[in-house]
Image (cartoon, rainbow, N blue to C red):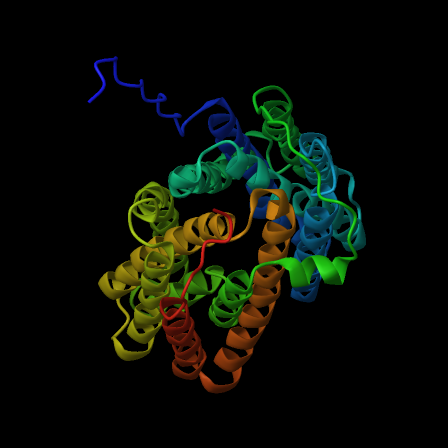
Length: 406
């Protein structure tokens, strides 16, 4: 044994560093901004006398544009030496597009403004995730993405409350309400510009889009199949608000039932925010595909409960709590598992592809669940979701992962 001093161990790299904190705060402020606008938008459209069709058209077109912008952004930004300027531009476009709702005088103006805002959101999303993954070691992916999801969800809690206060303060003068969204929106862009540090990277060489997709690892493609299968049943949780309102209205009355349903949704988002950090901690200690499969199984249990249980305040409260927990696991683990499966230089393409699969799934599932609910009732609608949730969980649990990003 050598008599020399033992080699000093390199100090552990802290996962909650300046970049992770900056991205987390930017997610909070940006979500705060557009949740104000999203909350006020239906009532604003009602003042124009437009039909509910326009609300669905605005949401559907914006989400579709955002999904494909994510794919294009991920593909393009992997070829850049610095990704961060693209993220800053995306945050600025979202902030300006959201605030411009106040200039609208017809529904198609709102459609154009929302589409621009969501285009910026789509452009920035894979870049933000790539920056976040590049700021920590592989062993801390779960905690970093869990922290970012928690901060984003806090914005989803603060945003609707701020919208209510602003509508009261400005006397439902909507241009003033939408103008106020600029403050948190521009703060988010500033945080990305000045708080986030991007480490040096070697851009990938120019390769055709289809070839880039084929170069992604086979384990990642199998992961996407499981995500897509689950996503085809993963309906928008605003449908839970409608479910709670309808089920409690006979006992509580329509107005009180609606208020209680919104309160349950706040509980849902609180559980989502709180459990995101726990899900991230688990992801760094337990194989990620198993944690994610557990989250998918919780979703299946929630859907079965909707079908099988008598729906009252307590059972609905349980549904909303489980819904918040499984979304925390789903979003945290899908992002951190994606970062683990794909080498760092291809993170933009991987996150863009994942976001597009999720966006398509969100659109398909919400339309189908809503249509099945209308045609056949809640048992068929949520039974459909339960089957796909369970299938996604089984497929995710069966993954045999080879960590190509090692």
